[in-house]
Image 1 (cartoon, rainbow, N blue to C red):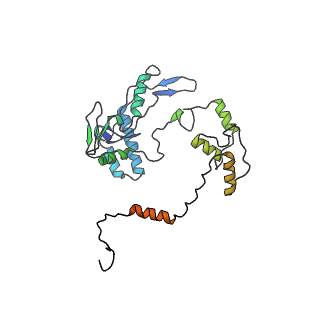
Image 2 (cartoon, rainbow, N blue to C red):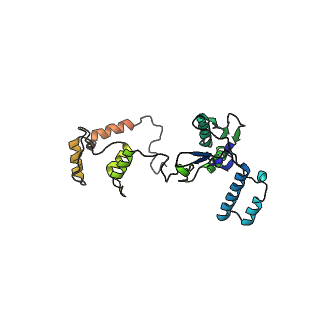
Image 3 (cartoon, rainbow, N blue to C red):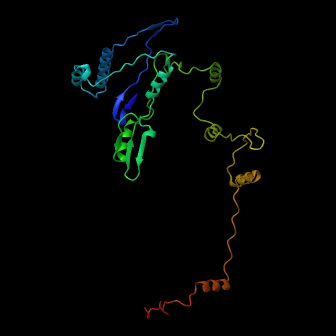
Length: 274
């Protein structure tokens, strides 16, 4: 499912790959060989309008009026491409799949002028589109970001997700899943550290053997003793505060800040002089 056209234009459409025939359980295949495009477009229009009426997005009278229009001026369209024979026409199938999964805005054709804020999209075989400011570009682009947990690609029929035929599991994987108990609500701390940092916290860093936890250390002196024994994580001792300055040091500091050639008049801070 795609919601964009060229230059981020709003154009909601679907790309569908279907088998041009039917497989039977004995392995035989019956090819259809012909798709009636007008009949397919008529069925699609009827189904979409019926869905909009059921969702209360369109009135029933309006849906009947839209369905009475000619197909070539109804606003709906359906394109049926030539069949892709497998496995001889694999390059063409790859081109079709690349077109279906293309991004809404390839970054290699996008340019930005920082001084003016102008955004320019220059595709290789189409006219360039210019947004006067990046705000205008972002307002057009965010409309095509899918909602959270929204599936853009779905499989049906033999490759439906519920059947599991798209990525079949090997026998070893099936046995491993059946032997392991179902995971509970809580995940072990060791597993979380492995997922996040790729480090096993229960392996000794020196001998690389599995360690066993005896008990939890909650007191500060116990933690400090453990860190001291391991030689890691200890903090440097705080230096002692300097002694108070003596009388000679005070006179030396005053001599540093004294100015014999000061231009400030004498007794300037007295009340009578002020």
